[in-house]
Image (cartoon, rainbow, N blue to C red; front, side, top):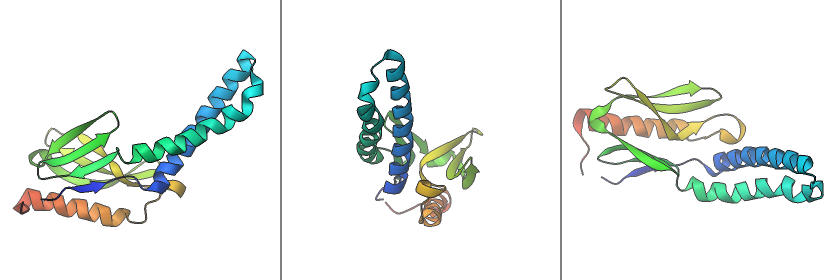
Length: 150
């Protein structure tokens, strides 16, 4: 079976980068004012958001969810974890804060929130979210109840 990949959209990566970059700029500017190097303010205000936008595109390719014959693999920049199909008992879209995310429920009673797909407001919106959730549910049911040809 060919692996399916779900990654954040470029809008989602851009939105997250701008938020993190703005927070970084506030922290750096406050630190610069305390230390007394306020003359660096243009670099401190614009540097973090611009850097975050470039980093977001690089990280977007390394974050997400991969569906393989072995199971559901959640990929982050810091590592990966695979949930075998035999352990997955349910897969559903749930509202968590301002986002709708996909959660995978396991035999043990725990749940794992997938890194992608997800949808939210503004930059976090994914117009194909329902299609992606439907594809995930189809793959899960195929593995759970009938298997998918390899």
